[in-house]
Image 1 (cartoon, rainbow, N blue to C red):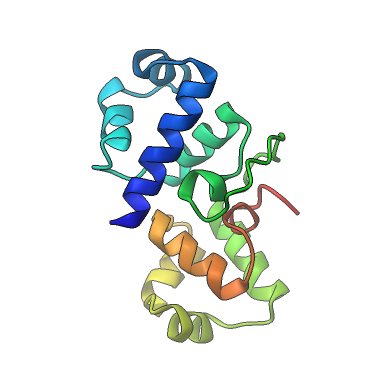
Image 2 (tube, rainbow, N blue to C red):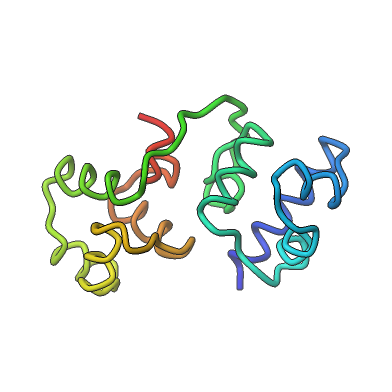
Length: 146
C-alpha cells in the first residue's frame, strides 16, 4: 500500500536528518520501540495521536508525513481539539451534512455519527478522504491549522 510506504520513507528521512534512532524516538514519544519499527517497515500506520506526536516532534505537517505534501513546512502547530468537535465545525463551516459527506467519501453515516458523538476517531485513510472531500489539508481536518 502506497500510504504505508510513504509514511515509512518520510519517517526514515526525518529520523536520519534529526540523527535519532528508533529506541530514542520511541522514548521521546512515549511509545514502544516495536511500534516505531512497524512504521519504518511499512507494516502499520500510526494512530491519529501518534501521527500528531510525530509531526510535532519533527516540526512538520501531518500531510508531509503521509506523503500528501512534498513541502517540509517546519513550524509549530496548534494543539488539536477533540475530533468530534472538529467534525461538527467542518460540517457547519463547509455547509454539508453527514449524508452528503457519507455519499462522497464512501464512509458510512453510522461511522460519521460515531465520530461526531466522540465514540471513536477516524483512521488515517479516512482522514485523507475527509481532506480530499473538503479540499484542505489533513492538519486542517485535525484542527492543527486555521
